[in-house]
Length: 237
Ligand SMILES: [Zn+2]
Image (cartoon, rainbow, N blue to C red):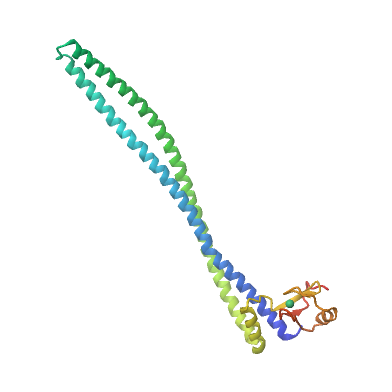
């Protein structure tokens, strides 16, 4: 392999690592976002259960108030019974008392029902609370390790960029310029290997004679994609 091709190959390996590191770095904020969203979901579920428990308790307060009023009313009706003069007034008042007492029974049933609902809502809330706390803890740990990973990646990237600069400094400016231009045009394999007798960059068949020469160490420039085609460890005819 000609020296400048070997240098470009080194440079290309370096750039590949840099690309990978940058992609990994970009994935971290996305992952953090996913974890935060998960926590928010648990938070929302928790407040939903808390709201429903609050509703039940409001209802319980109202029922207790209604019951107190009805009990007061019954006591009042009963106290007025003695002073009633006519039979019809007395009968009407007794009816009123029976009616209100039945209402108290209905309220009592609703109070018991609401107590069961409260128990269930409390259990659901406790479960949601545990799940939320678990999610918060899990996200916290994950976020910490992602921050750690971020620092490591930034560190590796810094080192790799230094290494790249060192390699680039050794490459003939003419070849370096060609390489950079090709890469900025989206060409990721400026130096490529022979793959099944074809250019590894664009898969165009290479004449058998040229393939032989490539194996012998000669650099071949692909007429289609412009890649430098060399013989690599995984190359084949
Ligand atoms: Zn090609």
